[in-house]
Image (cartoon, rainbow over all chains, first blue to last red; front, side):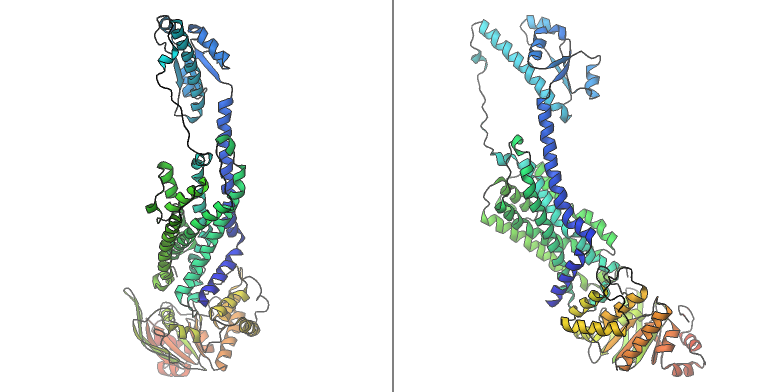
Length: 392
Length: 244
């Protein structure tokens, strides 16, 4: 056991002295991720508000065919612009998001009491044109509604007859659960930092030892090789945990700056929620440490190890992407699955739901046991001459 | 005291060592001389239990490295071919780390480092980080950490590789000091000068086998040549891979 402690202390001390590595693995993510997170949210909501409140400026083709309709639109605050030569081309070239075209059949259809066609030219696959398009459609719809009601009243018919169903939305989402979409980012950020925190140390303490040719003399010391490896695994785990805790702390202080009010989102990470999240994600540090160390041990050099790490960092991203594409309801059987259960549980915590105790135990137990199995395997790697002498 | 009997080791199809036997006594310096690739490093790695032999027997002070690896590692001091240091730690911390891995008390480590700073003349750089150390400074730290636990037997793989004249002289003086203390020293080299200047017994290894062994005089007599260099060349059968 003495060997484990000596190796652990030495690895931590030596790596803390590498200022660049410490900054990259422990500080960069906690500083950058919350800023990115809050910044993106600000950017998103302010853009949305801007588009919803901005004065609508819409070119109208054939305004002379429906002066009353155009008058109504202007009354509603829309600025009617002169008709362009080539409306479709203008939208396609993104010179304007939306154009109204009133065909010359409009007056005839109107007089005959048939639905008169009005064309809204837009490209809804462009996200920025979605809001102006919906606003134009809303105005046209309101005009149609108003005229329809008038026509029925003139014939002595109650307008209610034309609306047999009244749809009313009963919104059960709490302000917190509406923030969940935004919150997909948080599990993702926390998993990534848990992996990235230990990455440099994992490489430095295995492939790095080989590269600077210090592994062979190290193994000649009277300490069982598994103890040396366990010391290194623990040091990597500690760095992963440190990075995770710092990121969590940073998010806790960054969240109040989220533009939550305007989105109807209320996300709070109090000490209790943060503690729960830390408890749930901590076992991932063990898993990450074992995976990173295993891969780095097989590599002959720092460079080779780094090229593998790009792939490892993709692993914690998989559940986040899956849940983004296909959100699922958390159930007990999912809890022992590492990375998936953490994603689900972080969501539950942040939504302010109470998390069942057995879910917590399954998640922690499942992740921890898979991590420990991998760690046990990693601990035997220095017993293989092929691993020790590779590259020498 | 080391006794080696009929060692064999292959890596796949390559037979690196094919029947090496020799003895290294306490109070003597034994040199393994041979061209590059003769099997010296592999032989040493089997001695310090990093590689298990395919065949043959090793006894170091009566211990078998294949069975008592931990006990062997405690009695041996090894300066292997790889002598990388941790560049973000000072020379003192590098040596301390090895002392702690040997389970020494902090007080003993400190005292021992003071001794080694004296004998290896390291006072100028002992508390500097090893980043940018000269080859000679690095070898001194590598030796110091290898012998921090005062081993009875010291193994060195090509210890003077890359050293300048001054450092080489200091190294030789240190190795002679070990011998005077009654310790057993085994070093491998492909430099004839080195064995001639330093070694009491010479084991000539070529192509994985012992070509000849004995004192310098015995080897000259056996080969019928009157210079050590000619004797080596005659015994190995080629000049290839050797340095004068």
